[in-house]
Length: 311
Ligand SMILES: [Zn+2]
Image 1: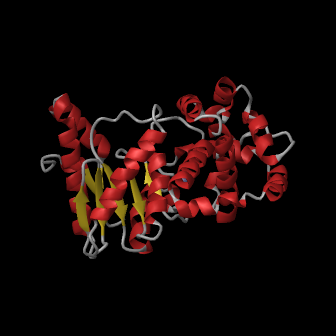
Image 2: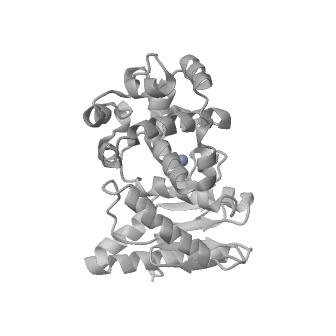
């Protein structure tokens, strides 16, 4: 279908890379509104078929109402599709009102056969072609999709990354993204729930007091190459989001629609919770000056934190 559009695909790092802007322009030019979904799905099929053909391992591509899955898993991949569909409905319900209104295409999940392929694939999207270590990634480049290195933790990774994907249209602070992804994973997966009560408040208090809470509000902590430091960010973000969701999800979803990365979500917190983020952080960490202070943020690092095409 895209045969007459040679610039629709390029090759980089040995794999085909769809140029979604070109494909989008083609769709806008030639296709009526009611056929856009079909066009985009056909372009996605072509992409996944090219990707499958470019790799030596025996991948298959399967498809359901809302998803594509590319996998080398030799077992019946239907359970993966079933799980993705079920999850899509659950996450959609939980984030009701804060969801993307994209009306075309399906959501692709790429499950690679090992770390080497995964890295080869994700390098294209990372700054300096040096991605951070990860169990999965949500890529926002043109056609939002998920990639993971294998089936280990498939459910857990899919839940977390699907939350990122469903909120990718909003200018959210990074900590809100990670906090809600962790929170929903905890709600939906029994294994994660068992680990839920391990928040070490005393340790966090000291750590953030000396490292500085601005690392959290600015999003800088999530760019850190050291996994143990990123983990502190994930844990605190989750606790603060838990505090926000406790009263009710409707207020939280309204907050999600307005939270803005430029102030860490401070203005939206005041509108919807009646208090600033510093007060919410006190409920989690104990007394201290935890207010966001955007004037103290390192502008270059903040820009880097939000320039990424993945999360
Ligand atoms: Zn994440």
